[in-house]
Length: 407
Image 1 (cartoon, one colour):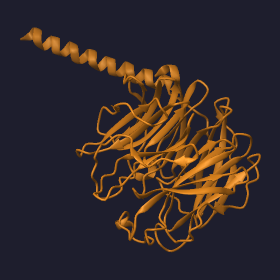
Image 2 (cartoon, one colour):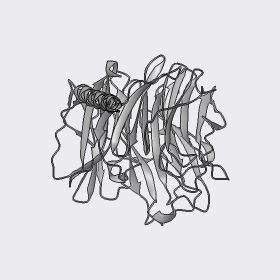
Image 3 (cartoon, helix red, strand yellow):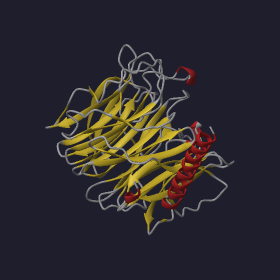
Image 4 (cartoon, one colour):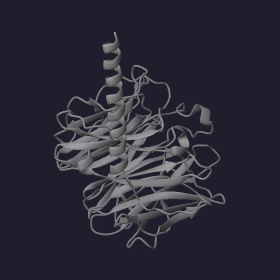
C-alpha cells in the first residue's frame, strides 16, 4: 500500500515538474514586443498583416473623448514604429468582432477600411475605404457598396490579387435594417456575401453577390492560390445549419458555395466566430470553430488543390474553447493555428498529415467580448501575435513574437 502511495506521489510530482518546465519554456519563447501607448485612451481591435515584402503591419483603433482614430504601425527590429493616422471620426461603428483592416497592393500603395454609422439602427453602418500611396496621406473615404441601405455592412476581408485587392464582406441590404441588438440574426431577408475588386486608386471595378444566405456576424476570410482567390465564411441554410463554406474565383467566374466540412451545426443565432484561411500556391489551410454537439471544437482542414477538395479536419483544442481562431501557413506542409480556451490564448503547429505540435501558451487575456479576437501573422522566421488586454481600466494592445522553430 505504502509503495503504491509513493508511486502515485512520484507520478504526480513528475507531472507537476513537467508542467512547470513546459510553462517556463513557453515564457522563454514568447517575447513581448515594445509598443508604448498612453494610458489615457482605450486601444483595441488590432489586425496583423504581412505584406509582399515580408513587412508586418498592424492596424488598430484608439478611442478617446468619444472619437475613434484608426492607426497603423510597422514592425522594425522588434519594435513598432510611431503610429500613423489613417482616419478618424465621431460616428463610427466600433465593435469587438467587426474590426478594421489594412492591406497592400502588389506594386505600391495601401488600402484600409473602417465602419461608419449610416442610421439610428444598432447595426446600420457602411464600409468606408481609404487608400494611400506612401502610407502617410490617406484619401477621403468612399463607400465600398452601392445599395444606399441603412443596414449592416461589414466583416470585411482583403487579399491582394494581381494589381488589385479583392474585398469580401457581409452585406445586409436585403435584411430591411436592424435596430434591436437582442434580435440580431432575425431580419426580413437574409444576409448576403459579396465581393469586389478595388484598384490601386481605391476605386471599385467589379462586384458580385456570391451567396444569398449567410450567417449574420461571423468574419469572412480570404486567401490567394495559384488558381485565384478564395473566400471562406459561415453559411446559413434554411434549416439554420451554419457550417463553414468556400467560394473560389476560377477562370473569371465564381464557383457555387461548397462546405469545407459538414459539421451540421444547427444554431438559431449567429455564434460570432468566423473562420480563417491562408494559402500558398495550391495549398490552403482553414481553421474554424463549431459546436455541433454542444461542445465547442476548433478544427483545421487542408486542401492541396486550391480548395476544390479538403482533407479530413483535425481537432486542435485540448480543453473547453470559445474559438476566436487565426491561422497561417508556415511552410509547404504545415501551419500554425491560434485559438482561445477561456481566458487563455493558445497556439500550436498542425501538419498536412494531421500531426499536432505541443500547445503553446501565448498570453492570458479575457473571455469577455471586450478582449476581441487575438491576431497572428507570419514574419520572417517568427510568428507575431497581437491581442487586446481589457483586464485593466483602459484597454491596451499587447504584442509578442515566437520563433517558428519553437512550435
